[in-house]
View 1 (cartoon, rainbow, N blue to C red):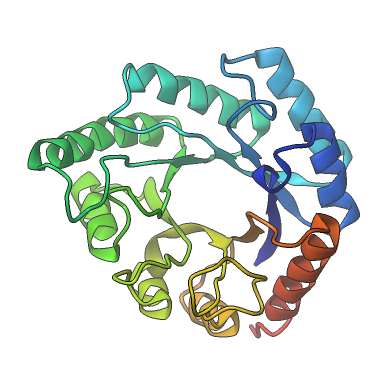
View 2: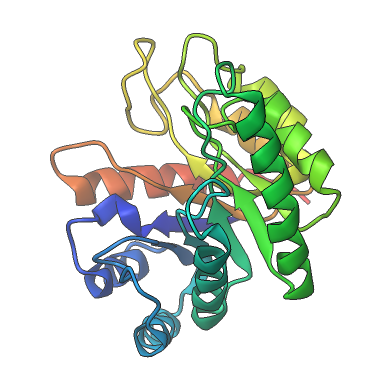
Length: 257
């Protein structure tokens, strides 16, 4: 497994500075946040190339493009095609996408069918262009439960649709370890997050989710992708980043062949 930093963790900083941080703190790659100021709203080929060149000069790779494309947005196909061009320009074949639709327990049947139908067309495009789509596992989206995620992947009938893994801290959310085990064969990327017993975000090592068990489980299924720090929680964000990075590195160090 490899260590990644999502540039959204430092959304207040210029992207060039965040890439420097990732290199200085010993990460292997960066997931580029798909919103300004890290990525302009309109596709800009020259800007994308500059970002890719900078990442490579720092000895990193782009682990994924963190887009906000979802099947229910207006002109979703155009936005998806732009995301595809950005990903290819950055040198990654993984695009994070969203399902939208609101909580899975209250989504309308019409929206659920529309999401599944449009995802199929997006996946067909991705398959043709050797691209992998990673569904964001997130509250207030159809992808807020393991069952719904697996239903969407099964419906797409393509290895080009995968999922991100991140624990969800709702009272009715799937147990994180059970979720990791059920989703493991379909996981394309991991956003390592944690929370305390009250659901408040906290350092990755200190929350209710045992990441040693998560890493051991995913390793057993052959996962060799990224463990990514998406957000850092402390007044001194660089100190927090070092702490989370070192903890994840220690977990990777326990993996045996």
